[in-house]
Amino acid sequence: MPDQSLALSVRGLTKRYGDTTVLHPLTLDIPDGEVFGFLGHNGAGKTTTIRLLTTLLPPSGGTAEVAGHDLRTDPLGLRGAIGYLPENVRLYDRFTTRENLMFFARLSGLSDAADRVGRTMAFLGIEPLAERRVGTFSKGMRQRVGLAQAILHDPSLLFLDEPTSGLDPMGVRLLRDIIEQLNARGMTIFMNTHLLSEVSRTCSSIAVLAHGKLVFQGQMDAVTERYGDDRALEALYLGVGEQESAA
Amino acid sequence: MTGARIICTQSLATLVRERTVLLVIALFSLMVLVSAWLGWSATHTVNTIYSDAAAYLTSVGEPVPPNPVSLGSPLAVLRNVTVYVGLIGTFAAIVIGQRLIEGDRRAGVLPLIGARPLSRASFARGKIAALCLSTTAMMITAATVSALTLAVLPGAHVTGAEWGRLAAFFLLAWGYMTLFGLVALGAAARISTMAGGLLAATVLWLAVTFVLPAITGNVNPTAAINPISGLAVAPDTPLFTQLGFWLGPISLSEHFNYLSAGLMGYRPDALAPRGLVAPLACLVAGFIAAGGFAVVSCLTLDPNAGGPDA
Image (cartoon, rainbow over all chains, first blue to last red; front, top):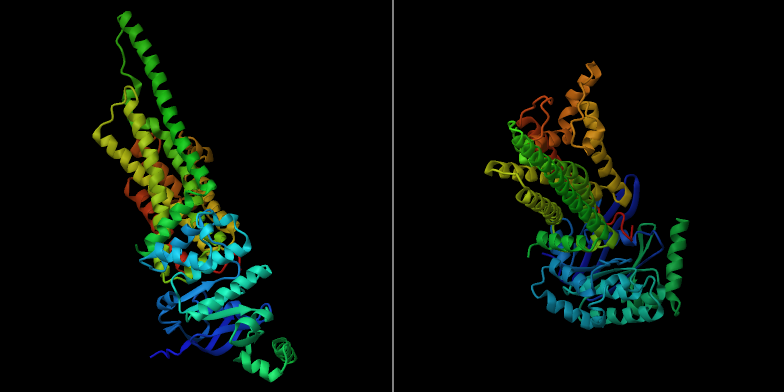
């Protein structure tokens, strides 16, 4: 029986390409209701981890239970329970926001697709964009439509890959507010990022990945307590990075 | 609505908004119209000359020979259609097949689709159904134009059997076109670069249309773009004989042209008969192989490759 109190339980998850290991055996537990920040330098293996956990990449080894579904034996059930926003979300340029969202709502098997799309657009404040073609949108507008497709089926676990990448400060703030609201609804958030300021404001727990290896995992409060100042996260991030490089 | 149906519907909706696809389909439809006009014009000219000649012969008391138009199959006036299907129709199918995958990849939606509760098999079924429906629509257009041409052509008396042969030709043409579309769909799923996927299918199309007929049946390459028998006596050399023996079965363009010419009633007498079964079996085998390639490629498609996050 899956442990219902864990949104994510990863055991020895590995990814190799030939002789190159891009993700060393990863073991990780994330309780329900967390906003989890997954930190790491560029190329650390964060995106690979998200792709493995969303079934977009087959693992080379290990297991994971995502939103109560086994990664290997129940991929369809898993996909039905998660939402995913990639770093550079594009969508169908020649379709309107509503048309794009209707497509993804139907793919998610929603019987009340039109209603859900309407409610999601209202929640994210993108109703004025409903009948406009996505191809005319700025990065920030696309990001909100991308987020809409990720949450319209009300997933229990939401994967965000560098969600603030390329956004202006207003867009970052707006996204932070949305994440907080989604979390308040009970949605667990798994967020890849290397923006430390966002992590310290938004996340309740973090892990740091360096060169494909998990080098730290803990609660945000504990990090602040351990390093004892408001630059705790930066100290931790740089510290584990240097340790890893030295090793 | 099932997952495959959702993918199919969305793919068709995407295709009709793609300018390149619309342009190629419009070109194909235009060439079918041109072909019908050419057939109508040639027949009209012969009929006019025949009427004048018949009137003259009657006035001088000479016997009037039968109208040459009525001697052959009326379907032969549509011989250009077989050429346009073999060239532009297949190329249009390649563009459609390639765009069905590449359009999603360029839009960056493959990872979003891949993270939905949709099986890869449903995805493959949806994409292949979209391709088949697209080529069916093209064939229905071509068949309608051709049938109207025959219906309004003066002196063309099409029997029930000939309507049946025309229908059989369009079924054959649909299969031949769709075969190339399936190859393009599979290539686009397997090769993540836009140019690579299109190039692979186009090279195969060029080889099947122009190269293989030349080295296996001694068919002059111009025969592929002109419905005149381009056959010369095949050189009697061991190399040519061996090439013909081993590569002949995969020379699908030859099989298609041979069967089309038989169905439309313009097969040259000089052409050695091959029967119906062997060429048809080769085409069916080619279709199954292309379908298998498309299915396997869609099942193993890497949704991350080639997209904006690659």
